[in-house]
View (cartoon, rainbow, N blue to C red):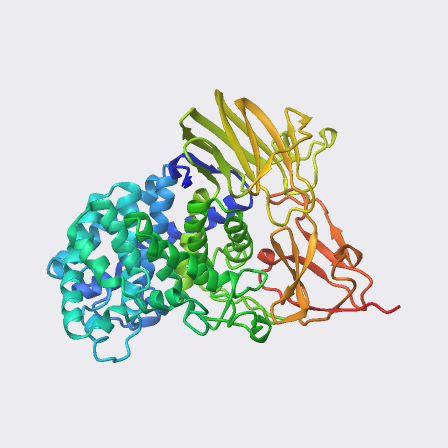
Length: 606
């Protein structure tokens, strides 16, 4: 089994991912602490400053949208904020963010005390009892799960004992409520989008060993989805996607905590029905209008409500569980595809705001959230997504180092042989504080031309580099400037075993644009460059004439120099030999332009 490198020992280096992380961190800091806490204050009877009466609601300093005091899901976002802030603070010294986080935790403890010592929620306790008679109530367990998870992350990653104390008293409330429901209406425990609850109780059982958490695990482990997974076949079609994916996380965590093989089998069965047997859009999405698309029927669902971002984030978490268990590169390939075409594509590259869905219909536009007026569920998963890159790159089994993702970064990894210092970056050199290619040393205009630096003071171990599924040909490796002619490639990894003492390793993965057919309509499909889905800047499916097996015949690369993250425009093309040509750019670069992802391929005239 693989383990992630310690998050505190990883740094993301300047570039595309660092920029997106910085946008996100600035947003976390920008949000007012009182506004983040507003619904917890109101539930605890605390009057917000100058808001006993609102003479002009339009000018009230409050968060609105799904965080408005009138919304039944109010308060969900703060839990996501806590998780994201904890991740960033664990990754490096951020005193201002840490002070803000600690203040919020103290205020939650204050609210809990005013509520009687157990309840620390942004919604009334009665919402949980309203699920009993099947009266409609919007997802109280989902809302509270976010608060519980945020507090757990603050304790687990930062050692904040006050966060654990709040959780401990909240657990007492849940033990009592689940006990009542198990006697009177067991179905209520599995209502209100409770999918993530099993994972949080399993986490707390592992962290504390307390029997109360074992009791809560037992209360939540009977989800009907597990029964469907045990039976085999399609357990998901038309099911609410983001309610079901966290159920897989519960199975994954319980296998790690208990060792009971049934939980691992359920996680594997979930992946099989969610991905292997279903297929997906080229972007990894497989839902429309928040519901799972039936297997291989994606062509029927090219709409404006495809790929809810929460599902992208949560499916990456599912894939990462399976990757750690197996080291299987297919999970890392999936994560890479989701990062570029979900994490990046659904975050505004200028403002950092999310889009709820990623429309796949021809001529779509992305709809971006506002800074304080929306707070859809996808706001929460987006602020978390942009903090977890450090946890997705470097792994170890204690003996060797495994590179899962190619994101510029550096890390310190502790091995049995000693301490390894590793670094990866796009292969460029610095001249006069400008980043340029060294034209005299064979630098390539490719993001997949990478330089690794590895130092373990002479200690020996294997460096394992994932060979991406999209790699078009044999990777090229140079050690100290000398080409390695006979590469050892095993189980999808280049394996380089030697004593490491500050060597530089140059790695090049050749890539090409491929046509990937759309599930259910093979005459249509997307153009994908490496793991990056290309978006045509066109307001309709104009069709493309040419041979799908040879995209180079109808695409012309564009590589002008720029003064942005990189010194060249990345993965950009223009069609050629078409009645009306248009540009294609990475889907993650699209901001407000109309775009088309799926094109009809047309045969060229003789």
